[in-house]
Image (tube, rainbow, N blue to C red; front, side):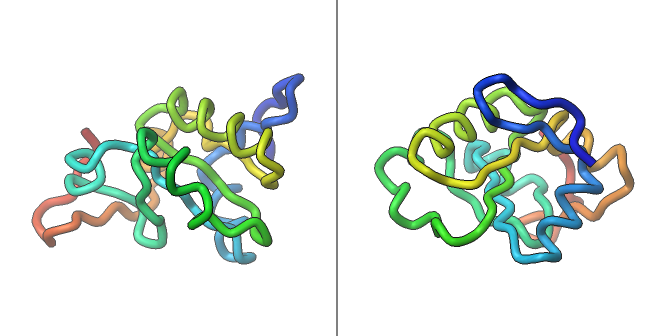
Length: 118
């Protein structure tokens, strides 16, 4: 369920809605830095650090909803606005991976050790 709607068109959603959209084919795009990703991320997420999005936007499919996620929602909100301006159907995970973890959703580590959100 949407948490809030930005007047510029990006909607913040909660973690449960992010899971629902992902189950319907949305791309969960984690825009955190490599060390954050390695420490812990959503199992079905795709990693593309915020600083790489502009140069690699062509790798993000236009035919799927994109749910942007970072640690608490700020960086992902910035990326979501850029994607919206480029014609993407996009949402922002309000509260980011912190909210994901608080919702009791799974977090996995890149190297199999104890996953955590940093």
